[in-house]
Length: 298
Image (cartoon, rainbow, N blue to C red; front, side, top):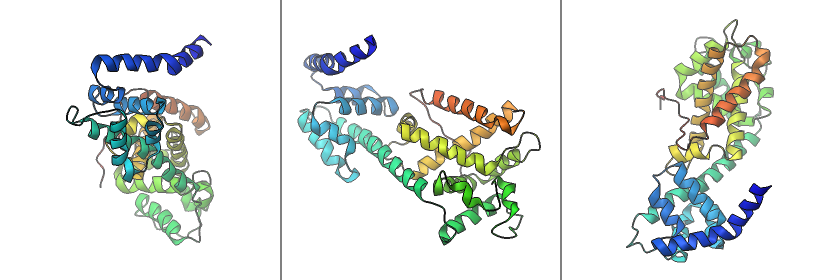
């Protein structure tokens, strides 16, 4: 209770006067101090985002929702409002521009990911079908698929004869992640599949992959992935960066599962949550970078 009261008093009254006093003493605004005081990455961008969101100025708050093609004009407006002179602080404009590219880019990335998640797999869509068959060819290059609807799909971890039913929760996002991993890290994906088919420690490769897509999606939606993307993408995060994160989760979960040696696949949810907690713990590190260290084919 006392913490909530202090937070209200600080954000509503004390913070404004503290900023004013520091500006009088240093001759710089809070955004200038953030951009000059921290290296590019999560700490700088997160502090800039908080500063803009907490501002009493409408133009500064609105910067968080600015379109990419209007960001330069937005930065100029902020400099005008804050009376920042380019001659005195020549690095400020570019630094703030990068921060805003990351902040607004994260928001747009979520929209793009959500659109893919909502795209329902359709057997009547030739592109969808081609993507699914591509997954088989990447993972099982020496085995011919007997027909489109077959028990063979179980060999790569689908539940039934027709994989389309397994994509209901994550839509095309789940399939595209599986294909991205298999196409860009083919050797590693096949290695993970071989572990998944282990007689004792095995798990359903495709189903677990879709589950990890849900994990990545939820972390993105909650904002938990901001430190990762702010550290690894010095600009606008794109869909490929989200797919790269999925590759990290797929590869690292397999290592985690094999190391833990669960007694049964029935314990999947327990170990899935344990792995989830590990990922969230990593994301508390301001220097976090959830990047697959093996080399991509592309």
